[in-house]
Image 1 (cartoon, chains in turn red, brown):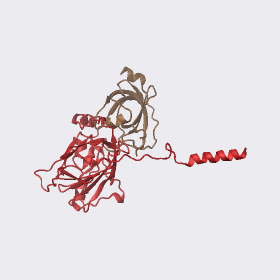
Image 2: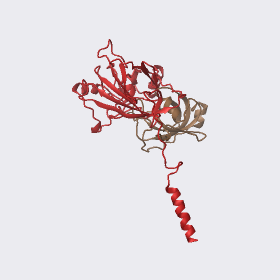
Image 3: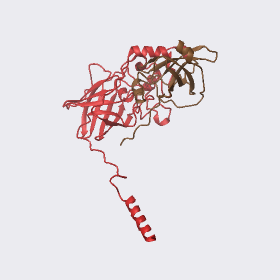
Image 4: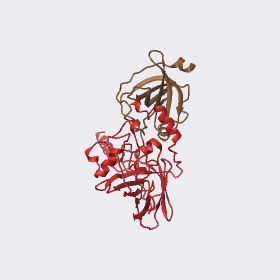
Length: 268
Length: 132
């Protein structure tokens, strides 16, 4: 009897410790397709992971020493003029002077990557990569036809001028310049100048995972480059995903401001 | 007005320090960190950007009607939290937990609303499934 008990116990333990197809084995992610970042992508960690209310996700304006940006004197001077509603420098809503918040101005680049980065659709053509953003239903064209990024442009643009190249089969690197310095770099009011060159690295880790790293290079405002997004993760959504609308409507803003009395300086 | 006077009374039970479930467009500077809970009747619900907001009437301790307004996040966020444009209608009896503004005005940021049938409308995102 005792022998049978010991034998059956050993058998059970053996079964439990052996690898099982249905247990303790993690499926390998499907491989990434070659030179393809197209698809509908949404923040992988949570729908709000890309909101960036306190500024660039990798360097939020939270008062921590390690998140202090390397401002030039002009950068600091410009920063002081920007009055955000969130973060360590937040002011009362009646004092906010964020153009996007108070009057629905286009937020432009690089802020489109740093504030309200939500479900994002990427399309590819033989000559370009086109990104459709949920927030404000913005689209932008990134030329991928082998051209070089021009240093001079006829005018600044809210979303600048972008050129992308495949660094390898899974990494698409985009350089953008010619942005309009009326925009804030992020929701925390960090500044940028027309000399800004931003680099976006879209790295497709697997079929279902895309990472975005954003680097800021603006010697007028910052003494060295800094990373605003560091491998921000997106997950691939089904191709039938209906991306929601999220528009800045002046009439809706007016109604909201009036109801909440946010523009009333006496409401503090 | 008949619905309002018949159904509302003031029941502040707050003073719990809680985290803000949503990072708002206009920041947190205007709001207190202690929540209050009041019972009232919806007069209007606006579904729009940058934030949805609900107006509701509450009877204070002296029996006077106080017109409250309180915000949620934007429609896209609220859909993720189970809300729709039809979630609140004029006449609904509601118990609202919110962060009031520091000025003392009847303005707030909603944390949750409990409807008369017990259904809870929260502004906190439900747990998300893990990804790879």
